Amino acid sequence: MDDEEDDFRLRNSLPSGTCHPGCLNGWLADRYCDTVCNHAQCAFDAGDCGLDKLAKYPHFLVDKQATMPVYKVPPGERVAVFNTSTIFADRNGTLKEGVFKQAKGIRVVAVHPQRQAIVLLLHPNTTGSSLFTITFAVPEEKTIGYEFKVEFDSSETQDEVTDQETSTFSRTLQTFATVPSELKRPKPRFDVVSKEEVRLAWSKSSLALDDLQRLKVAGQLTEYGFERRRAALLGLPVNTSITVITRTRNTEVITAPITTVSPTSTGMKKIKDEITRRNNQKNKVTTRKMSAHQYKDAYADSLRHVNRLYNDVFGIEARKVPAHVPHLVDKSVMEELQRKLPAEFDKTSATRVRSASDMQFAFSYFYYMMSVKQDVAMGQIFDEMDTDKSATWDEREVYLAALRSMGESDVDSEKQSKRLRQAVINCTSQPLSQKRLAISKKEIMACDKVKEIMLPTWNSRKKFRFKTNAESTEFTFVRVSNNLTMLHKELEGILRKPKKYICINDEVDYTREDADVIQSTTRQFFQLLFPRPSSFELPPNRRNNFRYISEFRQWEKTSGMYRRLLIIGFVLALLTFFWFIFPQRRRKMCRKVRQWVAAPRHHVDFAQRFVIDA
Image 1 (tube, rainbow, N blue to C red):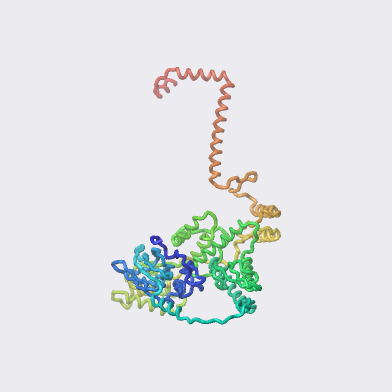
Image 2 (cartoon, rainbow, N blue to C red):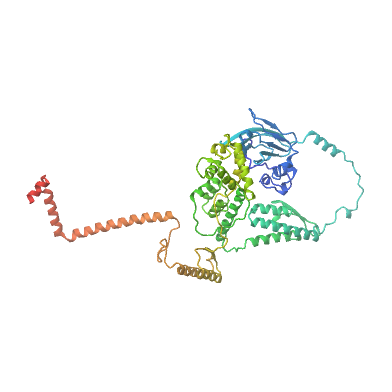
């Protein structure tokens, strides 16, 4: 274990309990402030609940030194914070990631790139050291690594042990009188949870559960996160046991998992039943066949996955699902998107069927085009504003650049123009005439004040222009189920008002008796709407017997070889037939062949032969 390296994000902790009851080690440093871990013993969720709360713990400023620095955590301390902002500050380096050598005693190591800080949380009563290797992203370079060593001793100090021993042996002995036997045992406790307390807890939990359910439906909470926060709301740690005192004369104490709470606890039973009911309402599906429902769930989960990913990249906003229609895709835009998110698209390509972690193609493509902002260089802005192509800006072009650089909140164009003009004048080194202003591209490129005025507005604009149509005037979507009445109504609506795009989703349960009627109705609709078969369709008397294209290619190769052998055999049989049926012609032909072979051949010039024949 000492030689094994562990990534900051994986946090492979040792099994020595939890930092606080109910806070699992896997919940620490998960980029989310967990309420059950928001305690000082857990370093306030390893800094996820705010690094400002860790001000009382030891802080170390990691400096760039010639030799490997060694930082010693004070004895008895279990939390330490390392500030790495000054290591490559002169080169604008930012903390990216890192690894550390796992040592006994390290509970979790969390990296916070935004604050350039690393939080170390230790197990109690442990001693050891670890080597940290952190990686920085530096402009105009790939990455730069830096190493430092940390030594720690989280054992209790001698003062704490002495105080505990003193308090332990300072107790005074008491002499107890004789107690009657009927008073030695306590009476059974009844009504541990009163009805008023259950009713009050139920009303609060119901409101909070509604909020959690809305966050889950909106895609802001994962299934795992929803279960964790729901359990924390009810006061029940996940994957732990609870103690329920039953209302019986024997006063039994039963320890059971959360999923098997005793039905005699009425308050907990109501809450559990309500949770089950909400889950059943969410999954309004029957158990007749799981394949189709898993297909739909995987598609919906992939949409939620992309939505959560884009919330982190582009910000939180409402995103609707694009229509089920053919899409024209710009290849260069799709390649740009795949370069920005290579790991996600590689994971999508690695799955042969739909998965919850897929980058749903149309959804990710269109909302990338609708969300990405342009990244414009100052030189490109200068060339665009240089309308006369003179390689300089005059008064009119400076005014045009000021108008184009105005934000949505700016209303005074004259003030913006004066501000930009003054910045341009301050950056020029040539004496300016009062009649004509001319500033070169080189001077504009070197002027930081002009960049400060123009670049924020230009780079905050959308890169692509788009228009959304809320009404579905050009397409329609039909779910074909076993409801024949609803199917007739939807298909008649399509025939009455034809649309440009029609998407029909097959959700028929073919194990039921009415499946043949549904299939026949759908076939008649297609024959009425598209009477001529497509070139890709097989003739009515043929069926596709192959599941994979490789099987079809193999069959095509084998059948072609058999076809060629059949043709060759037929030609040989025909020649053999004529050879034996006509013997006289055969002898005459053989005689002519022998004469032609035995006849002498003279090399006669073609011109001489022509004269002889003439």
